[in-house]
Image (tube, rainbow, N blue to C red; front, side):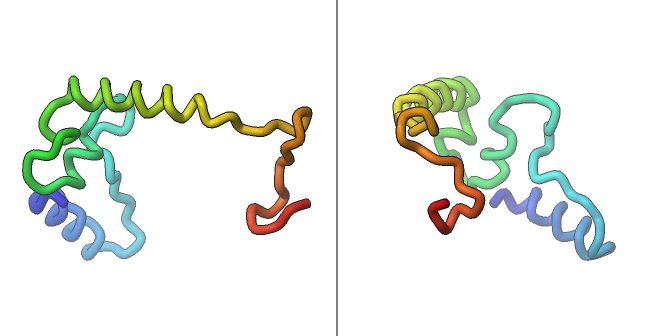
Length: 85
């Protein structure tokens, strides 16, 4: 985690245990700031926003190919994720 960001979270949370601290410094926008704060050094997602968007598109495309089973084709929506209905 970015040391400056960790220090900011520590000071926010230590002064009031019920305080709310955003883990994403830009919660209303879509960018790589959340990942940038979690990385130490110059990782791919932290250093290049263009790479972040390219990787995000690739990940969403791959996720879309998983083939989720819907109830109409033999799948089920579980009431409790640990157990079949």
